Image 1 (cartoon, rainbow, N blue to C red):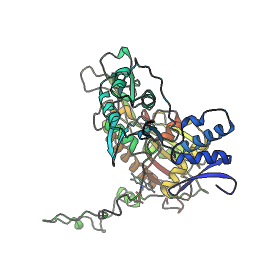
Image 2: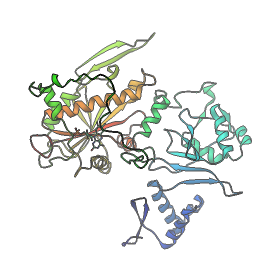
Image 3: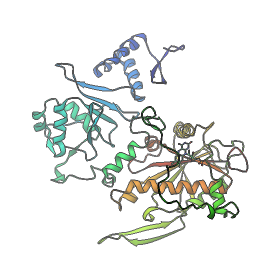
Image 4: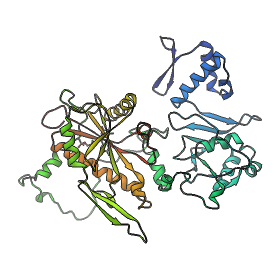
Length: 459
Ligand SMILES: Cc1cc2nc3c(=O)[nH]c(=O)nc-3n(C[C@H](O)[C@H](O)[C@H](O)COP(=O)(O)O)c2cc1C
């Protein structure tokens, strides 16, 4: 309870303010420590409505788990752990005559002493506490009629199946699918994802899982840190020092590489200008030429290609730039897409709150004193590259992102501006801001750009 009468939820070292509620609602919410039936949130009474609002607020902050348990012995059958901010358990409609199958992205694995069912598509993971349910789920590698399935495992009831279907762990199969297990699962953008790439993307970014992210030093107590420089190999050494003595004048490019450094705090009295931004984008990312060529496969279609200032795997150029502008002279605050073909910015309508959240996350990642003047979110059109490459698509995208980030660093240094790569990014927030599905086009890197605080050095 806070001084103004509102209540807060405290978890680890973070505190979330929940608002003001009646003492009766707060007392009932106390039962959440052991379990509160979802049914008690239904109803029109003031208490039920208050309790519902309080529970929804806790859910929005990912502070609730949902238990399905056996009424006979009160043992948990399944516990649902939300992975996205606004997960709320919902049952998709099912009939005994429906045929269902596991999504090709769903996987069952051991986590500590537990068995968990996860999927990069799902907004929650399902902790499977009952071995019969785990074994029955495994049989869903093949399509099954619900009626028959329930005879094998009565604990796999329609509630649970509806929740699994809603989370896209299970897929409903139509009669028109015949015997084929479709790769696309109802959206052909999904057919373009390899399983490992999809898991890696959603688990190595923020927004679609609830695991710790970033520099947590998880192994600091158990394993010593590796040295900064690899210990030398034994055997004959050929020193190269005599070939690179300070007497040899460094080329302008070598000087640029030496000058490059990360800049995290920006001079907000003298922000980057629109003209500088235009020059920066022209130098680093603009389309220089376009051409067409046949795909190197039998009866392959004609493919369009482009050339740009940085290298990219297969000349695919799948990376797109989205600019969160907080402080740029001559350009209003907002979100913009850089159209590399026409060298133009397109404004995207989005909420001020979401813009602030994106910029603040970058500020936090850099431990900076304010938001970056311009935050460049590098998003990938995943299908552009996975249409051609198997197994290596996502790894190529990350390598392309590295090439682009170094190009940004060097161009910023050359222009007397400052910048910093950012290793984290929220793919769910970006999806909400742009309306793009997270598996169609989404963040794979970020770069903060601005005029550094110390004039002359760009930082
Ligand atoms: C892929 C990548 C991710 C990075 N992520 C962050 C980040 O999240 N926050 C940050 O402050 N710096 C980040 N940096 C910047 C590095 O900390 C920085 O490059 C490194 O300390 C070397 O310093 P220098 O760039 O000034 O030479 C990142 C750099 C790279 C290449």
